[in-house]
Each structure stands twice: as C-alpha cells, then as structure tokens.
Image 1 (cartoon, rainbow, N blue to C red):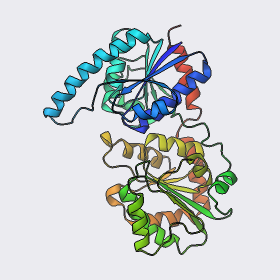
Image 2 (cartoon, one colour):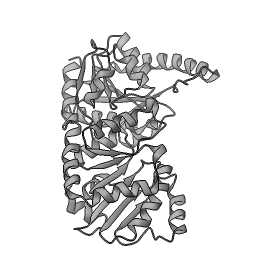
Image 3 (cartoon, rainbow, N blue to C red):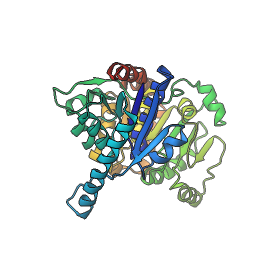
Image 4 (cartoon, one colour):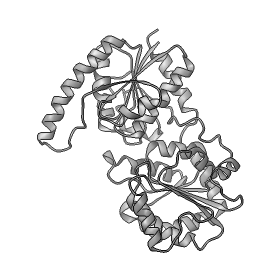
Length: 369
C-alpha cells in the first residue's frame, strides 16, 4: 500500500498529517508513505526530522488582494501542478490524504483529476479556502468539529472524526506531570502557552498575572513564552522584580513535554488552534482561550466559540485582553473546583476521542487495493 500525505504552512496542518502517516504505518507496517509539501515550508524541516520521506514542490499562498504577488503565485502554482503530476506518476499512490494549507491544493486537485482516491481532513470549525474548493473533488471530507459540517455543500460526503493528537496526551498521570516539572501536589497549576513562536499580547498580559501569582503560595505556574518572545518576557518580569525561576514556577521558551504539562495543569490559557483544542479535549483540561486574531478566515475564534458554547472554556478576544482582566478570570476559575470539574467534563466531550482510529479506518476503506 502506498500513501501520499500532504499538508503544510503551519503546525496545525503538518502535525495532523504526520499523525495520520504514523497511524497508517501502525495499521499497515508494510505501507510506503510519502509526504509532499512546499520546498520552503516548515514541513520541509519537520517531516524529515520525524523520519518520513519528503518531496518538495513549488508554491506559495494566494494573496487576498490583486497584486503582482498574485501573478507570481499563479506562476508558482502552475509549476506545482507539473511537479505534482511527476511525483504522482512516479509514486503511483493507492491513496492521497490532505490536511490543508496551500500545498494541499495542487496535490489533491491533480490527484483527483488523474483518478487517485483522495481524502481531506479539516481541523477547524471554519474551513480554509483551499479545503472548501477541494471538497467537491475528494472522496470524503473528515471533520474535527461537528460545527464544520455546515460550511460544506450538502452533497459533499463528510464524516466527523475528531482531531488526531499525540498518543501520550490524556494518558499521563497527574503525579507524573507534577514530578516532571518539580511541582508540589495539592496546589493549583496554571499552564500558559501561545504556541512554539509565542504570543506577544498574551505574554504581556501574563506579566500582570505573574505579579498576582507571586503573592499566592497556593498556585503554581508552567509558562511557555515562545521562542521569539522569551528574552523580552524575562526582561519584563525583571522590570517588575519577579524571579521567573522561583519555586513552583517553570518559565521556558518552549515546552518539549507538553503531555506532562497538560496532565499537571488545572487550567490552561492559550490560543485556539485546532491541535491545541484537541489536546485540551484529550487531557480534559479547562481553558481560557485567546484566539489569534490574524488567523486565516478568523478560524481560531470559530474554534474557540465551539468550546465556549459547550461551556468547556472561557473566551477573551485578543483586542480585549488585559492583564487585570485575564487575572480576574484565572483567579475566579482556580478558586472554584466545582466549575473546573464541570468544564473538564465538557472539554472531554468537545471533540471525539479515538480520532486517529477513525481516520485510519476511512483511509483503508478508501484506498485502492
């Protein structure tokens, strides 16, 4: 069995694609898996690092306004179509699976035109432009959120499968998470993360929250500032006379062991990317969501509202974010064990579990034999 997987541009598209690749390989150890992405995309680094064969094609995202850049993009797209055709002819996959991002466009379109079985996984409530255009071409659209169904044509075959997450998430004991980060049992733990690169507005608000937390012996902190904002955040903490390495705190640029962090935490403050929400759901972790305001089609806010409507999370829009306002919500929730317990239960129900099993089943049913 030969499977071509594609998706790129952001980790939200790449990591689900890698999870699907791993799920297929586990189900079919003899399967050959090829990942196709943009030559200059972050997938060109991440995919080989994770041990998968990678082929790069030309391409770039389409500008949202008519410009010279649009003409360059169209020229690059034509080149991507020819490169994709060459890859398909040489690899001749039994199945092509896309997870979104610009690169999914030429790969899935060319694959469908030549009759290869194709599948699409949409991670967000509000689908991206590429996925909406491709929906009529693929054999089935697999959705992470039930709410996403309304954004595809009625005749388009869709199935809600959930969002694949790392196998460890939701399967780490709280005691293990606390021990890993050197935290004390019996105290509340706040987890804060704005993604691998960070979220400047969130970090600035968190400096005020940190001032309040520094006066509370009953609360502990795990805070990933992101790589781009780490030094500036440390400088801000120093400015308000706070030691980021104080007992019961872990302030780092990036958290490698996120499954342990999720297990240790009582509450998470974070963005609202689909993978983040899926991991919150798998870990049954209540959250305060601050959607990234510049995400395509504002999809993070739609993702966040899906959890808020289930009473699984609280929402603060980035434009309304202040340090005092964030602390007020954090303090309110961490002091109310009953509300946290109810939110945890609803978070666990927000996205379907065993998503990867469902996705692999559909892949095996769709692939040529």
